[in-house]
Length: 485
Image (cartoon, rainbow, N blue to C red; front, top):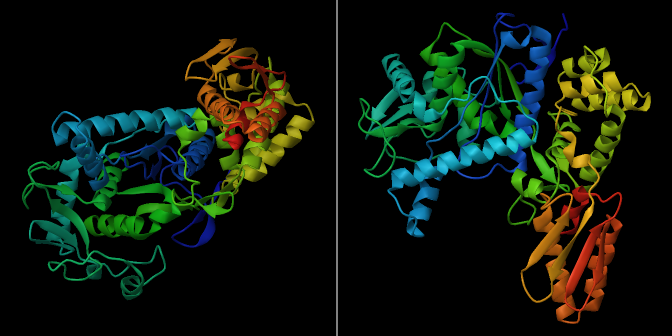
């Protein structure tokens, strides 16, 4: 059997992965808080742990692996968004607006992650479905002297757990000095964190021994992982931004509630994402969601390829050049495997790469070798272990033909051809409207620049007395459209 080696954040070294029960390999990954669209940084852990899920299924058999990724559907950000909607005139109670928002956002999340080729987890529990187990765990923590009630709140006593801080490698005093912590008069210690908090009449709430209220964020994952995977399981994953305080607090809660159990054996954290060498930020104008890229014509498979090109433990830089290179590579691979069948098993070299702490970049290098050798069956089977070249996913590579028209004077847009309308139509419309406005204001230099830029990627424009007509030339590359925005 293949030996998988993973870097365990808890021990700070790479170790052989030895499951508690090889017939029941269990993994928990922190999922989304469903108040808005998932941005590209949110997608990185989804893709990273999807590859690990696929590898575990390959090594231990699909029916022997359980993957849980939670949905946080009770949170102050969700409440604030629902309140904003009501203040803007949306009909319904605050509770109804909260429900609408969470259902809408969960649907968005599924659609976007499906587009990236991510398998659905075995279980996807919603926090609101596990309030009872959360209350029970909080009661157990109070009974064991690790939590206390105060003014309608229940707080975890961090000083009661001597190992607090080991995951992140900091002492409680260091954390107090370097962290922004919520100051409250009812806290015994500044680092004590909320397990339960009161709700006003409009805010979502549930009855509890401490009054009507709602859970703190950290207790949600502890309770849901316990209910679905047991008090001890194999792997806990998430972004490095969750290491402290979220994962540190999970460990404290779970180990104190179940002191004879080990909770998660292996902790895996992926590093953060940048855009063109800079931190993704709305203030810098480089913040975008997965849906933004998809709507701009960047295929989900291309996004996935770029995310896998950097080892999960390293900061990852999203660039237009990487996206263009990924699209070009995948087109070539699709041509190679077209009409062929996958080999019974992936290449041993690809499995070896992934088994070495999810070395996806190394595995992709092997895929390049298989492609260069023309080994279509091995390329197809091996790429699918990484979630690439999946059946039905290559439609974006089909040649695009057709034409369209945009009016100078108004918003009337008509697209005709084999793709009507293509998924990237809104971006074409925006670019041509920019050019129409430039022509209207007699800025012919800008109009010519836009036409030349579009011609480079295969979108050819001709002008008439009433508007702009465009055609898709052979080799048109929609993945490059978003770089011209």
